[in-house]
Image 1 (cartoon, rainbow, N blue to C red):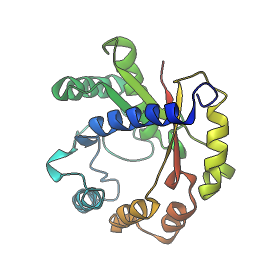
Image 2 (tube, helix red, strand yellow):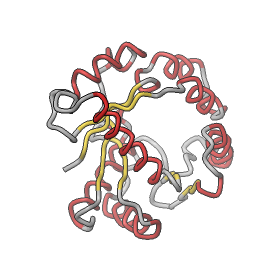
Image 3 (cartoon, rainbow, N blue to C red):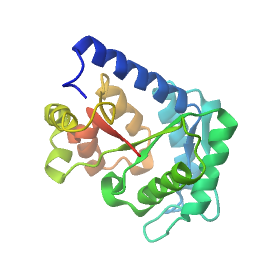
Image 4 (cartoon, rainbow, N blue to C red):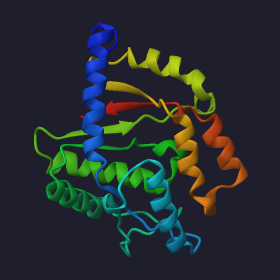
Length: 211
């Protein structure tokens, strides 16, 4: 992408993608109540607090507590069910772009990967031709904990893909991300604090278009 466009043109393309991402993020939808530890109600309130830090209106945050989509390792989610839910949300809100996990799901969590497969199912079977789907590229463990140093690597790797197929999004407010994560008090243990501080995902995210 960066090889074929001037810096000015590249910034325009990035701004366009960011605008489309902002449009998709309203509403925010959480597929599960995250009740794996019996703290679903608390975690709902924590999501609302995090959304406030990120300046997302609370009436645009939606939590889907579906009996067949309960959080937890070993609890496989039905990909067809997910595709159906995604189709309903997209048609209800006039969404034309969605961002999801890739097939590894950043941490390898099975539910992250299920959501990826649900989006793929919708994309390949029922999505309009103009619809776009993007996935967050998972990195290896060395890059994952390289903090802001991965900005250079992410930019370099993006150049290896055809124009318009990959975007690097820099987080200009990493402190805001830290504060938003801190609102999840029930999960804000020492190793997650370290993760948010040193994780490259706090500083840069690489999105790849799903074909």
